[in-house]
Length: 381
Ligand SMILES: Cc1ncc(COP(=O)(O)O)c(C=O)c1O
Image (cartoon, rainbow, N blue to C red; front, side):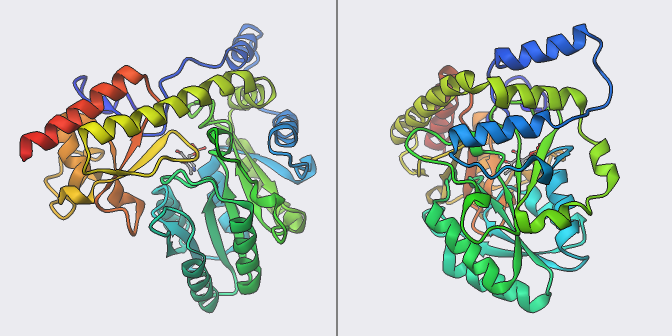
């Protein structure tokens, strides 16, 4: 999608796909399946076993009980199905804004109401704002949910154990069920740690969604793992049968190989992403000194505060359905620099004036993009 959506002169640094070759163990598993004509329905618990072992080894978390897991078509379908388990139509779902835009769209199309809890200026959870939002949600319904991005897209924050314990305590106090989207978990960069939500005290009735799709660049190979905490096992058993019909067998094979054998590749990837994160800081300081950048602890996404450019109220014309999501600085960088970024305003409250830049690409492309963006700003001065 990243390289197909726009004309050839546009550098695409928007959707969360990386420009990397496929991890060799994943490629080998897929080749083996194709060579064997193994293209039927998925079966078995290998994906769950691979995640269980990966979590124990790399996150020091031994809480994945394969009996409390389900394979779902992808993370967002898993989120939507889990919302249906723990809330009813019209019930509120709290999200920490700004956040991954489908958190709004999927919640609303499931007939639920979004309540925003704004993040702090540092991009981290604001526990007081969260408490207020959970309280409002609880006042609306006895079946409310909190949808967490752990780590957080777009700010790249890796929530700490203390933060997550405070979330769990607040959720328990207001009797709100938590769904933790942990798709970016393997992408915590050197210097930070990933804390699985289900590993914190007080999170027993929560759900987590894990997937190899972001870290190993497998978005086209559909699968994800839904994990229920011990006190959510009965809810998980109510997952309708059709959900298990969605994941792709080749997706399950690829994701399983990634978690089982893909860590050496990931280690190299993370070193490259950390180098790109630093390079981006240097490039912005020289080319776009007006832009504020808090380097992410996780993900290959940079959340750039462009409000000083003064463009975020000037939403311009709409060309087509993808470009129409662009406004303010993203629109300007698209039109004048031919760089496609994700426009901050679609991430909800607090996003206008920001852009999300995907640095999961080559350093040559990154240099060229920031140079063009700098030129675009200078040409307007
Ligand atoms: C936080 C978050 N959740 C979910 C997704 C999408 O995952 P999937 O393709 O498995 O639905 C993304 C994709 O970028 C994401 O950033």
